[in-house]
Length: 404
Ligand code: HGY
Ligand code: MN
Ligand code: MN
Image (spheres, protein in one colour):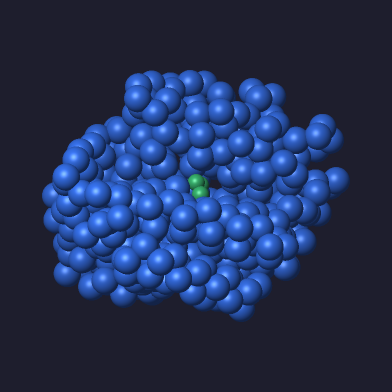
């Protein structure tokens, strides 16, 4: 039996990114596949029955697979240069929680009052490879059209269909899976906190209340590609100059809207040569606000300013929505029961999206958050102290035992 910290330690070298720092474990990349294999081995060592469904979601069953089971899970993929805990903490804590429940005498033979338990690993939660966050849980619930998903491309031009096929999935079978959804009676996800709600001492574990609405948009600025040496400054229509102003305008527009967040974290000049004036610059916008109508207004305002900036630079700009998830409130009854099982645990809203948020529209869903002292995440600096990780696994065990 390994503790949650020993389990995390056993994967600490998988997918290290020497250039960015932290970890780069894109969905279906070698590091993420290695982590999937690690999870399957760990689950089988615990006598769990493992199956991978038609959307690539791994289910590790403690007890007979059945409808209405208690399910806990998270993800193993990361953002580029991400931290060690975003995703894997929930998976390692679930494995450790099964160990704890076994020491308390619970067994998997489905005897007595309790129902089966399953641990799930959702692929492509970060959307770092194919651009849509929570792709696995969106496919499961039908939140994304299967054909749209299959035609998503990574930066190398691979379609999700290609990669799915290469990982023994049948592209013709991906999509909404009512039988799998029926297997989930209640879903609980444990996750590292990605904010400062728990950082100032006090309890290390919180219960989630909601997830901020969030979406991704692609802005494409087109201008005149040309030679950096032969093109006078007055003769340029440089999309990079327009894009730079748009990035600042994104910041300024969001800063004027209380509670809004807007980020340009990814910007790609085409063709991207040092001595080349770009012909096009693609940039991706992540915008979030508790009120979906405000997010819509924010995007409209940003696009209006972007068009003015582009025109002033002799360029043009287009905006395309790539994904959107409205603000989600977790199941009040389930969250209340969890609060009773974790007396004194504060309640926290999440600014980050999670698979639990996608499932919340289909099954009773809730979250637990574990202290990250600085709140920094999607960064190598993401951190959870050993004692807090241990407290999280214990809290998850208490919650699972109470809900079984
Ligand atoms: O982007 C998010 O909110 C999550 O980390 N996928
Ligand atoms: Mn996550
Ligand atoms: Mn994340």
